[in-house]
Image 1: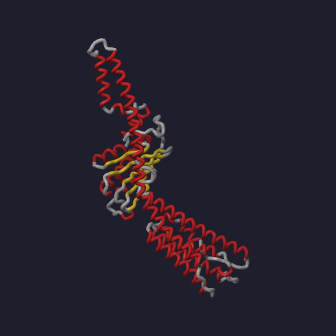
Image 2 (image 1 turned 60 degrees about the vertical axis):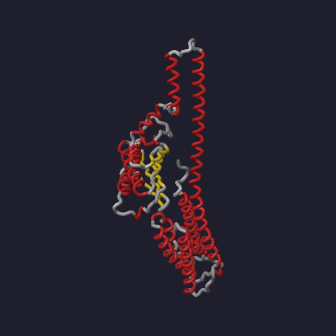
Length: 409
């Protein structure tokens, strides 16, 4: 049973939220600097200062493209492009007919802090601190060189140093909180599981007590009303049947409705069910959770393709993850069916996988893309892997099954 994010994804979510916040701050600061330059151009129509705003546009574009580039490559590009951009920005403003200096109350703090914000884009404390310091040094050098080239007096910017200090404090705190969360996540899972088990045990005890009460009273009443010391054959058969039923586990199951029977039938004939059963036969312990009936809405070809893709994911867990346990969670919506395969194994870096390992690329991604679906992979070395497979439902096949009807795996 899972609650919230998997344990290996929760710390990443916290760090990525921090990175997104830093990049949003950097983009906002660059926007403010560019707009301030345009306002200054309007106030001094005789001066040409608007190119100073254009010098910041490449950095703003990089912030918008941060999700499409590798982390280290993006950091280096942002460091160089923004360093050159703010140098040109400062050079244009300081070399105008009426030179602008920090002594006039004009500050380059915004563009400097925007460069320091590179520090949170690396998933690691030491690397994050190093990039933040590098951003600070490049920012000060870029502005300092512009001041020297225009004959301005150099000024030590205390505000930028304070911004750097704040960043250097926040990055370790985020990492520390992420580690605490990763340690707390298993305890939360255990507490939720214990609560669910306690609730299930209570329901079974209530049901057993009610069944015992009714059955024993009926039998005692029948014995009391018997005219002889021997029970009638029909009554004896009824008592034996009730006793055997109580000794077995048949009474634990709720009477299935027609919709539930249809959902169970669709689930057992799906490609996903076959993939899970085959993986269990191979020795993998697989927990199937969520809206399992949702797979019944897929067409046969889509169901088979989804099952084969999930089977490949489970085979990868068995071969490469170092764990014998995986969870398959199904989520259904009006227009799609999503399946998440989660394990707490050794994890991997997808870009670093060898060319000979084509399972994820060919058996999973390409097969799902042929269905106009998509695959997302989250994995951290040493912390496990989560693979989300989303397949569209087209056309929708209605079996009279209400959304949310579950079936047993």
